[in-house]
Length: 309
Image (cartoon, rainbow, N blue to C red; front, side):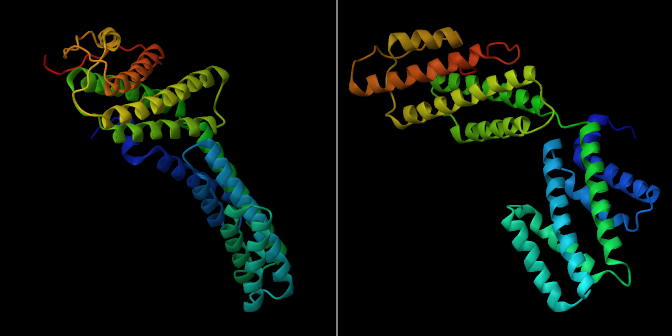
């Protein structure tokens, strides 16, 4: 049965595939380098394979730092009395203290694991050779994971940023049209989740290595769009909190007509306090909508509202 390539990668997950490739390469490289226990290189690769190249680098760095502290402490204690229960307990406390003191908090657990491996798994082997081999194993696993993540289908956060942004703006324009032209409710909570997702993609992109100045300009533009969305939702929530059946003034009606090409049919505007407040916030909402339309990331047709006349 033929399976579409994109569908297959979506079902299995590209990170899963790259993790499998990394482990495969770890075993091959370990054999070529005559490394004693490929298991440690494979574990380092699995832990270091993250959703972005930068995340892989940081996870690998944390493991490497923890390995160095654990190996140094394990070597020192193994030269005194390998496998000694009291020294094992003291050594773990020292590893945790050192990593916390150096603010390598995420390295503490792997440091304890490496220390314990050296103290309990020597089986007559040289503590020096065993400790050095654990460092080499870890370095090999980390290096392979980072290279695989960088070279094989590297994460395309820019695509995620632009697609999420375009989808969000489209939905906002449509839902605001249905709200203010057709008097339908807006699920602002749903839209806020989409904005949070967009901000998350932006953060991941900006933290990654694979960026250039032209792409960064686009992402900065998207960041401005997310800021406009925050402002828009704040004023929509205020509008929703006001009484029903408030009236738009002529200026706001004309502005909505320019955006949606629909006449807003309501009673003649009355200059009451609530209507003044309502129209003030509506003017800001409309300005935000115009700003979003003027900042299209890709070419997009004006979305028409689907409410009945």
